[in-house]
Length: 375
Ligand SMILES: [Fe+2]
Ligand SMILES: [Fe+2]
Image 1 (tube, rainbow, N blue to C red):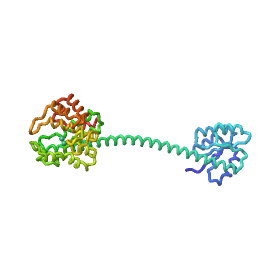
Image 2 (cartoon, rainbow, N blue to C red; image 1 turned 30 degrees about the vertical axis):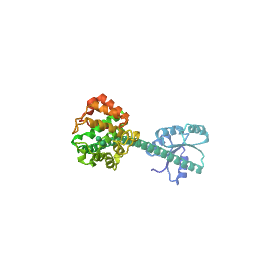
Image 3 (cartoon, helix red, strand yellow; image 1 turned 180 degrees about the vertical axis):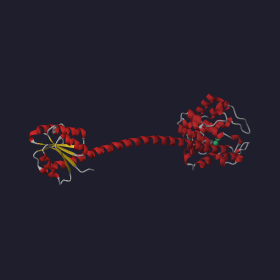
Image 4 (tube, rainbow, N blue to C red; image 1 turned 45 degrees about the horizontal axis):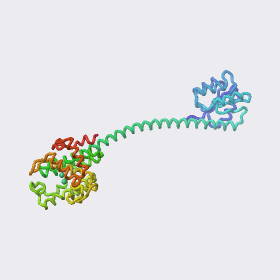
């Protein structure tokens, strides 16, 4: 930063000399000029913070000079040094905002120095304000830029996350499917059973107007409903003849075994109860198992699954019989509506069978998880 510099303009050389003498120990650079044109010339070569000008000078008056300086060097603090006779002009100049202060001739030395010091401070302050404004403006621009970038990044990340999330869910469903297939494979006659029960149950869920995440739970519960058969002896599961009462008791263990298998899996926590209760009877009678729950106490997915399960089992071939026709299935559903089955679930199944007919129970269907998650 340059030295504090003040330029005095006066046509009386004695005054300029007196001022130079007065200020020589202040540590300021003191420039002088005796004409307006000379002053403007000097300022182009030598920057100054303050200009103090006389009013009455030949060629160019003080007011004219100061307004030219205002044009060319708007930062310079302008002052007027004037005798009482030119007071009117000076006051006018102040009122028009042309000058910062007025110093009268003859001046008081200490007052003059104090005024100049104030003027230098004023200059510094104005510059500092300007600098801070500039910094603020630049920072605002940078911030705007950063915000724009950030928004873009957040958008992109959110999209990536959503994609990852979907990939994970698909992988998760595929894993569950593999498990369900392994269970069904224990018996040649039940191949694809779990997947189809899941599909039928999810269609019922949609027909019931359930929210998407519940439909997904219904489907997954359908896939896993018989997972407990892993813990039942193959000889019992694949036995082509009628089961003995003891063997039937063994089979009846599968919902509870399934629940125990799934219990430790955190992301299946809301599926456990649905699996456990898929053989409860709606009327709460002891034909249901394991807990003889009734009505609403049975999870809705379980009430859906028992209907889907019945339709799937009845329409599939068994060692001892061919798959049954839909009218027998409908009769069975109607007969047990309200006792084994939730009538609401029977109704939606009847509606679906009515509208879709035999294609509803065709064997080679799979739940379209991609389509389901995308919509
Ligand atoms: Fe079952
Ligand atoms: Fe089943």
